[in-house]
Amino acid sequence: MNIALIAHDNKKELMAQFCTAYCGILAQHTLCATATTGQIISDATGLTIHRFLSFSHGGGQQIAARIAYNEIDLVLFFCDAENGNFDEVNRMARLCDQRQIPFASNVATA
Image 1 (cartoon, one colour):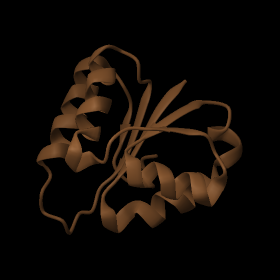
Image 2 (image 1 turned 180 degrees about the horizontal axis):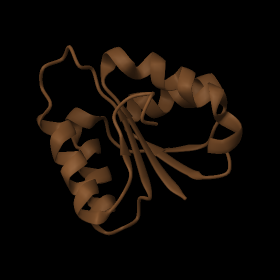
Image 3 (image 1 turned 45 degrees about the vertical axis):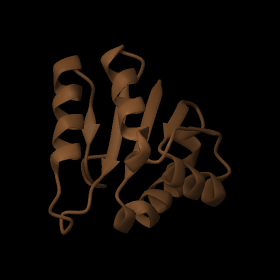
Image 4 (image 1 turned 180 degrees about the vertical axis):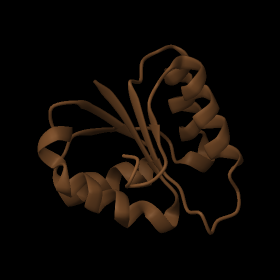
């Protein structure tokens, strides 16, 4: 399974903790992430993660393109509810809905 990992700045540490807790399961899959999130997770867990550009420099678009081509099977996008800017989250969630790809925006849904 190809899993995309994305996290807003205030949720990157939570994503690293989540990945640490589920490291055994995640290690059985192919992981990709935006640049900083991927580095933080890799440093915390030792997992191999294909890193795209940072989200603000096109990494979100790179992952979205892979979703559009059915190359991603699951998206974990831990978003900061206090951020107030949900445009990118909504676009990613909508694309996942169109392609029937599971999308989790927080730890409870992940």
